[in-house]
Image 1 (cartoon, rainbow over the protein chains, first blue to last red):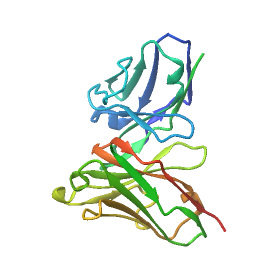
Image 2 (cartoon, rainbow over the protein chains, first blue to last red; image 1 turned 180 degrees about the vertical axis):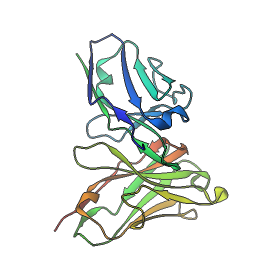
Image 3 (cartoon, each protein chain N blue to C red; image 1 turned 60 degrees about the horizontal axis):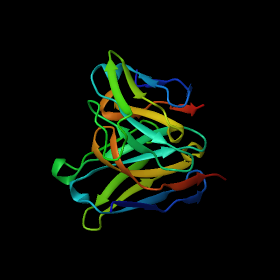
Image 4 (cartoon, each protein chain N blue to C red; image 1 turned 90 degrees about the horizontal axis):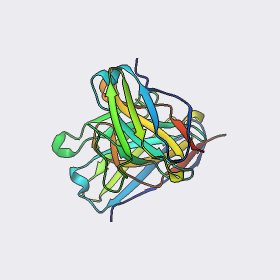
Length: 109
Length: 120
């Protein structure tokens, strides 16, 4: 399958920890990258490779993977973390192709 | 400062053609892989296609829905990326983003996007 599957919506209480997951066959072989998108803005790369955060991304964002599942964890979620989150990886149907997950809407309560 | 500025979007009838441009500054464009990503109104992100740097062959790959209709090219002398879109369909309506790409699936820098609306 070339799909990456994400839960459509997740919520977290302010200051608590939340995990956003991404499932797909390609994740058994390739890392996921993660993007944050706020309304009206372009997406922002927050994590890639083996838990690599680009400059400027807070260390409360971390990543992990096991089997066909990649996870983005936010430890101590802040109000500004409320956004849509997308995973991306190689497409298992064609290694030179890439695919996004359907996205997860994170609500910080 | 890194800047990616898309242009060329607009309203086009089904079956028509449109060429998007992405002007880049602030990094060495000729060394960069570049990717187009689109987002239909109210929907998620969709990978459109990618072009590698000339030193890595300048090869292109495309998502199945656009393969054979869309062509990605680059002019390293002008620091500009292009997306030629032919035989446009209503389902191609989206904001189109150009991105500077570190590796497969890793889009470090994004433009602000340009809206393409395909409608009769």
